[in-house]
Image 1 (cartoon, one colour):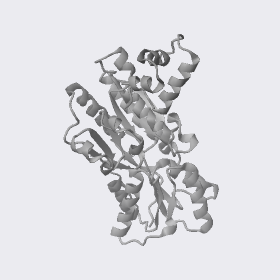
Image 2 (image 1 turned 90 degrees about the vertical axis):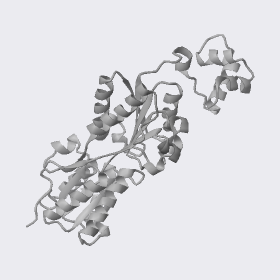
Image 3 (image 1 turned 30 degrees about the horizontal axis):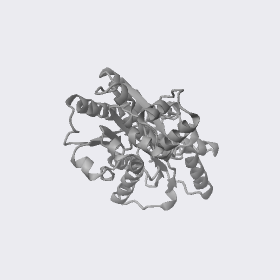
Image 4 (image 1 turned 90 degrees about the horizontal axis):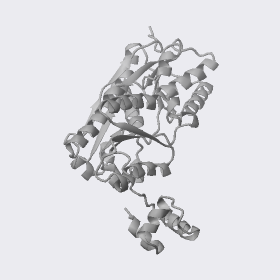
Length: 352
C-alpha cells in the first residue's frame, strides 16, 4: 500500500505539499496540484483520514457492502429489492443496539469493489459485511481488506484464501439452500407433482448453484426423469425470467410446477403466465426463494423458502463486535450455516 511519502518522491515535491493537495489548500500551484493528483490516481493512493486525525481510535462503524453488479437496473436500488433491505434493516437494528454506526455501499460493477478497500484504508469502518458475493469477487478486493474483520455472506469457503480461514481472519455465513430446495421438491412430489421445473439464478453465486444442485439431487433421488426443457435460465433477473417463460409457453413445454431460485423470478414468470391465461396454481404451481414481502402480497400468495435473515444478520454483527472488543482474530469456528424454512401458501396445488 503506497504512502504519501512515496507519492511525494514520485512527483518530486515535499510530503507537506502532497498533504496540502489532499486537503485542497490554496497555496499550491496548479501544475503541482495536477501532478500530485495524477500520481494519486495512477498509484491508487488513499489517504488515511483517521490516522491523521484520530490516531489510535476506532470509527465505531460497520461497513455493509451489497454486490448487485449484475442485477437489472430496476433492482440496483436497495429500496427496490426486498432481499437486500431485509438484511439491511436487521443489521442496522442490531449494530445500533451495540453502539455502532453503519456505512452502506452498493457495488454495481467490478471497479466499485475499490469502495471496500477505500473504506478500510481510510479507517472509516472497523469491520465489514459483504453480501451477494460472486465467485470472482475476492480478486477485486485487496488481501488487507479481506482479513480486517470481514464477514462474507453467501460464498463458498473454499474461495476464501486458505490462510485467512486457517488463521480465523474471515468468517463465512451461508443458508442451507441445497437442503431447502431438496425439501421443496419433496413437498411438490407429496402434492402429486412429477413434472417439476426450475428457474436458475446467477451462476456466479454460491446460492445459485447450490439451489440448483439441491433440485437435481431431489429429482434423481426420487426417481423422476430430468427434462432439460423444464430448466429456465433466470440469472436472478426478472426480465430474463419473463423471457424464458415466454419461450417455454411458445414451445408448449410447461411442467406442472416450478421452483425458482428467488421470489422475483417467480413473480415475473407468474405474470407472464397470466398474460397467456395460464393460471397459478390451477395450471402451474410455484415455489420461490427468499420470502420477500412482494411475494406475500401477491395473489395467490407465493409459497417460498425463507432463509433466517435476522439470525444471519445478528451473527454477522456479533462476530465483528466480539472481534473488536477482544481485539482478537475471528473464532476458530468461522463457518456458519442456517436453516431455511418452507413457507406454505397458495401458489402450490395438490394434484389428485
